[in-house]
Length: 173
Image 1 (tube, rainbow, N blue to C red):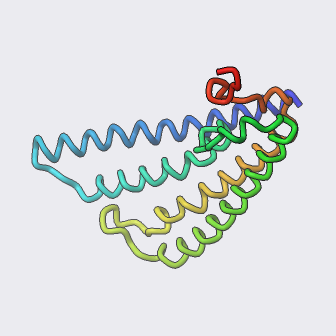
Image 2 (image 1 turned 135 degrees about the vertical axis):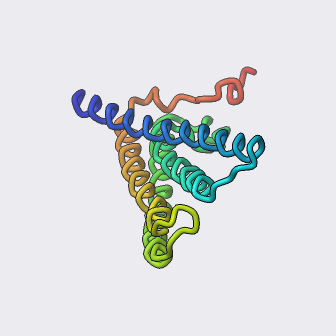
């Protein structure tokens, strides 16, 4: 089991690093585009389109990382008041709902990419399939992350479900 956890952590680190590199590249490219536009009056449609595509990639790529790291938006003031044994199953139910939404997203993403992907982009002059394909591919990766998270929730120690916002939920405060 420890080898599987190490392997999963290594895979996640690679996944996370790809996202970090994409965001760093996006930051550099945006700064470059702004400097070139305002200082030298130069602008390239290819760079603008690449930045837009990189922004979409980093957004959709981050979905799975947010699931694994519990960085998604959650209103947990009531959730933190529930007993840990019940929290486990509420969290599993929550992630099953996320998985259903993600599967719908992937399905619709494949349909959209298939329909719109035949067009050629105006800037980089590549098939739009490469740009629109980001959605379903990242959605599949996110679905894998949700399944992994559900497995983690089912096997987690009860201490994992301790209140995260003790200051807000502490009755003595």
